[in-house]
Length: 334
Length: 211
Image (cartoon, rainbow over the protein chains, first blue to last red):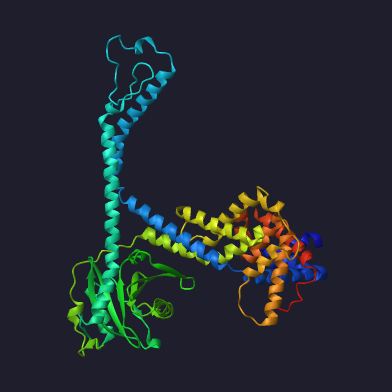
């Protein structure tokens, strides 16, 4: 093998991209050629240097923020789209199929009416003098000359279409508003539960056996999910009691932690990120690959995140940053 | 405030149950959330590739933003479980190729002099880890020299270096991203490294930062 032929093989050898035969050939050549061996070593070193230099570059914070905003906006848009997709019920294709036929006829008549203006009237197309012009059921048949049908003579189907569109838009707006209201109520209800615990309206009895308590809680929801366990012992917080709360038809497993500072109520439930309050701040932990949503009402703060298959909402008067730090460092699923 | 009364768990609290809870989780929505999160993981990688392709910070940021927007728009075309990093890099490279290479927008404005605005921007992108003053200085100097050397290499030889050496892609993955045969990647990489070696002169091997 000549040295100039070996150059590419040296490169591939450095990158460990050679087959068995090629590798044996180049290794044999390197043993016998000091120049190529030096070239191989230099290229290996260069590769390591390039990789090292690349590790020093990271995306600017501003870029990270912009991309996060864009992904959040995209997710919100997708959510809106999925809302409208909810209207795509199985019977819609049939409805559309039934509507397609008359629509096709309307379109054909419309085109014909346009074409008739362009071309010279044929003898058989001209209505007899004195008779009203022929009118197709769709209303697009032309009158004599270049006159269009007046607004007053709008066909009934058009008025029906407009009414339907207005009705659909009205229902959509109402449904969206109602849904948002419902979601707001969910998070706020969790806040109310926490406030109720703090004020003593909800009386808690100290749990002696925490494992038994968790089993009871899981059992109460048909073992579909278990309460999230947070190890907050570093902050001297320990689970004290637990119960099941139903909010808006959904079951939440409520665990109360008590320690140095304002008590923490941990809600475990089946849900999604959409259960965060509107306007929640989103934080993404790249290491844990988890998004946290932080929101507040008055002096009560909540942090929501997904923990395995379930959602975990921490509610406390503790500062949001402190709650976030607790979650990022200490969570472990039961 | 005395919140906790009694000594035993009153299990009656836990035993009322009003039928099955309705899960409001939406698998498609969750998949999209996960996808968005994973994009953030590769942001540093995308920025590195873009920075060395377009050779300045502003355009690199534009490239990465556009890549993310396109990726989110084409979310449905991505097969979960396949190589997201390669998929994103391909989107980025296609955008770079369409916007910069084809129009020669950036090539005309290229400034290869050291100490230029782009070189200053390079320092702004260097992470602020602290490996010790001397080592840090040598590493940063090495990084700057490699960045400057790469700027002087034509794009066709620079791209394989950026993808294989910086992006840790295999030849096959790089070929897929660059839409060219694997053999072409190998030959351009070989030529590119030699060009870069020439730009760096005898600098590589002197810094003592090699691991």
